[in-house]
Structures are given as C-alpha cells and as structure tokens.
Image 1 (cartoon, one colour):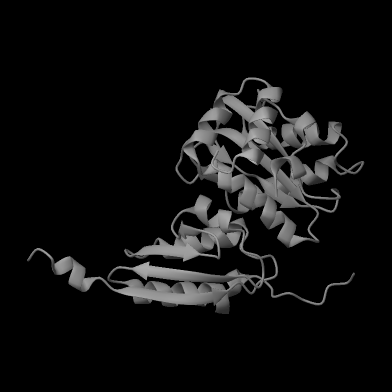
Image 2: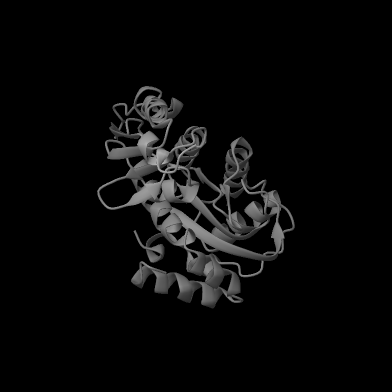
Length: 157
Length: 107
C-alpha cells in the first residue's frame, strides 16, 4: 500500500501545538475530524480509544517516532495523519527518547489485513534513517506531503 | 580459550511457523515477539517471501505485516538458538500472541 492510499494529506500538522502525548493525540484526531474523515460525533471516542491503546503499550518505538493507532468503526477505511513536534514529546518510548514525528492511524477493525498493509508501508520507510531525517526537516505540511509522495515512488527512501 | 572455538560452538536452528491469530502480526504481537527474541543471546532473523529482518527490532518486525495464514521462517544463530526457536514457535503457533483465531465473521 502507498502513503497516498491512506494518509489524509490535508490533515497533516507540521508544527503540533500540544506539549504532551494525550494532547497530541487529540490534536491529530481533531485534524482528521476537521478534514471530514471521521463519522460525526466519533471524535472524542476515537481520542479515548487511541489513548487507551497507548496506555496498554507505548507505540513510541524509538528513534524519535511514534505510531499511535486504534480500531474504531467511525472510519470507513484505514486513515492516517502525520504530525511533527520540534520540541519533542514524551511518549514513554522504548528507547526513552522524545518523539518528534508521529503517524496516527485509525482502522475500521473489520479488515485486519488492510491495517497490516498500512503498517507495512509506514515501517518500511520509518526504519530508514534517511526518511526519518527528511521528515524532521519538513517545516510545512506541503513538504511532508511531497516527501510521502516521493517515498511512494521510491521504495528505498 | 582458543581462537576459532567460537565457530565450533555456533548452533544454527530454523523453524517454519504460520501466523494463526486473526489480526496477524500487528504491532502488539510484533512487540511480544521482539521481547521473547531479546531474552536470548543468539541472532534471530525472520523471513517472509520478500524480506529478511532482525527478529529483535520492532520496526523491522512490524514491516513484515504478516497477515493471518502467512508463513514465516525463523532462523536463530548462537549458543541458545534451539531454546530461542522453541520459545518463538510456541509464542506464534501455540499461544498465538494471546489473541483469537479467525472466527466465522458476520458479513
């Protein structure tokens, strides 16, 4: 799967205002809601399930990135959004480092295979040092969109 | 201690396993796998038809995106390779990451 198949580009936030993990999750989910990607009235519940999942085990997998995610019927298909924090946010990451780049993913829950395919694309790129570095250098949402579209064309990025 | 002894002690073990829980190898099972793999000293490599990844790296394991029914090969190299393979096979195929097998879904 390509980023362009499941990332909501217009909801990307290049400089997150939130200063803590739960605030960041709320900010990204709200951005997806504003972009019309969530069913009406689901926003607060989705924020809750993402935080609940995060409390079970941190998705801060190290190297400054986190991938909070959850299943919720309030989305029609797998949908993701990116956010960046230049100050860094404590995600209780595996390597104890702050998180600067976040990809939040919501899956409808009736198609676990599609959720896995989205995760595959995310991690294929996130595990590359070059991609993580380019991502952190992005200052505008359009730059993040360009990077993701480039990554779609270039598997080695 | 003699030079060259290490290579004689090197044990290599392999196992083919199948993902049996409905949701597949998503992040939580991948983390469980890495937790178990990391308890052993041996090197652990996991392969699907396309990639060979480090079984102790959460990012690489998540990249496998192994769906229910996917077959993976686990290879362990080192003194405790056999123990590691047994523990990982048990986690994947018997415990199924403490998750349910596919049920007949209502369509």
